[in-house]
Amino acid sequence: MNFLKVLVLCLVSVGLQAQWSIGPKVSYGYITQKSSKIEVIPMSDFIVYDMEFTGATPVTSAGFVAYNDLGPIFLQTEFLASTYSLTFMLKGYKNLSDAPRDYREQYYFVEIPFNAGVKIKDFKIGLGPVLDLTIDKDSELSEVEGYRDTSKATEFGFQGMIGYNLGLFHFDLKYVNKFTSIVDGFSLKNDRLKYSNSANRLTLSIGMAF
Image (cartoon, rainbow, N blue to C red; front, side, top):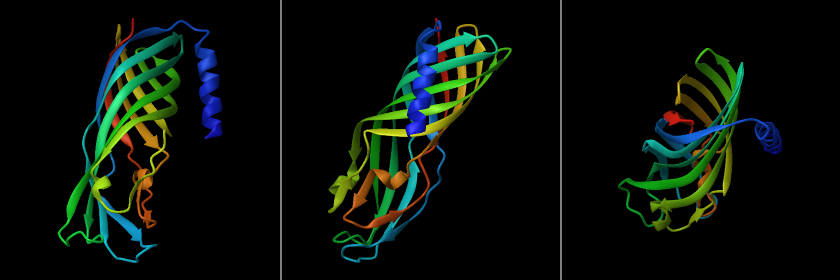
């Protein structure tokens, strides 16, 4: 994480010396992780129950993009208010019935990616770190006994981008790989939830930079 912070600071310091074009941007995408079972290791009451990640809603974002054309290379950063939700199935937990029930967690956050890359005519290919700042979370799992919100105020990731510039317009396809697991944001009592997959997202966006 310290390496990412140093990298961001270096990129920002370089970018501050350059001329930027700024404008609005919107994006739409989806969580790439498919539904799968979460391994539960009971640590408190040793009650066996089933838990599964069952899906996600689309990822929607709106905000601003800043772009700098440095000839064969470019710098690009964004400030996007984003949201999506994840759904979990819980069955046989404590006083809950054996009938499975879905619980949704809605995430609201500010996404701040920074890309540096190369330009080939009007095409651009870039890589860079992503910072997610948590704004709020609305969780139906909070109704469950023993639920604890363990989400962090800041989360990091890394992204790759392929884009195309058409005059003022920027069309970008991005894949964000998060460094945290889908289950890192909550816990049930002291039970261990073993699940290594992340809420990685693939988004398509359009923006204008003046």
